[in-house]
Length: 450
Ligand code: NAD
Image: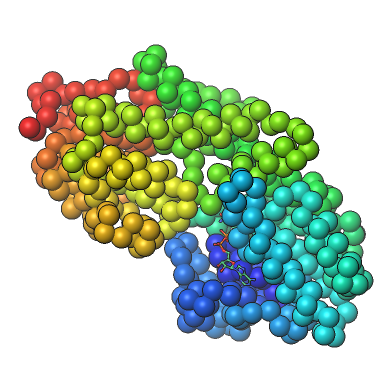
């Protein structure tokens, strides 16, 4: 089949490359000139495992074309997929500027184009009712016989996006038309099996299902994070508690890892967007609101624990941050808890040294000379007063703790990802705080290097 995808970001490019890998002929439109130039030279503008090799492969096989803008040729496609960003606006609602600009562009181009029929689908996460609004715009332009609207929400995760594309738990198609649903069955032929059902629902249900899934996962994270704070007070162990909860098949083991809070380009904006969708319908989503406020509180709690370990203040202290991406295996720092930590530490007068396996460039683009990057944890720890483990990259899982301690000014280790135990940190001579693992521990022989 022929597919046009609008937007060459995490979702658009991964979808474009994977659909082309499945044998379809794909045009991926990216209107950011810098990203477009990179893509044309077969370079991925961000880090995503497996994507680079696959991009070269499908471009060399002439199954993927990169274009800077939408043209009437794109009406040769069977399906046009909208994969542009829908960021959070100041009010918390999804900002649909990119999406509606793309739709207007398509409608304007369609007026002078000669084509029979095309399916136009959102893959971007959009508020319930957006598909109907697109439909109304198409009706007003008297194109409803030729452009058929659908919703096909995307569930891939950054860091494993290529794998997720090929192994979806479900493929959701929102449309009023059985013919359109058949088009999607062809599109995903070879991918959907009994274990990966393709499900036909209404536009509204498809749109809501994406927000429902993301918000539920965010709620699970906020729940375990609040329990981690409680564990600190009770002396209970959050890691063991989470494991025991996860062994219950009704609960499941995923999304129960305590952390300094969820981040990334999806959970924060999607929880707020669902809250706004509820408000518009006069339905107060109490659980969603609680998940959001627990997440907002989580980083403040973590910062307070860091300050406690540093005897009340971080002013003029050097703090080493391990990990700025919002999770491992991505260079995406959007809404990362590390950024909130950096902002708070900078405003309190701390010096920041950091390292991240993939996100150094993005972090430097945001902070410039306000922070100092290092390519290794050991260099980043030099003359530091505290290490804060923020992202659970593999590179931070087996650190040589005595070597780290030797280069530091004060031996304080704060683990917000529960990679290390108090015992191993203490044996290496560190004062430590581990989220949800009870009280601060000071080693018997060393209280501080000062
Ligand atoms: P992104 O910001 O990485 O990519 C969007 C791209 O679209 C940008 O490169 C931008 O330049 C481009 N663009 C905007 N308007 C355009 C236009 N008119 N023509 C061509 N290109 C245009 O965003 P993303 O992370 O890929 O997310 C896209 C959507 O998918 C969002 O709604 C998001 O919520 C949803 N989503 C994201 C993920 C994820 O993990 N990132 C997962 C599932 C769903």
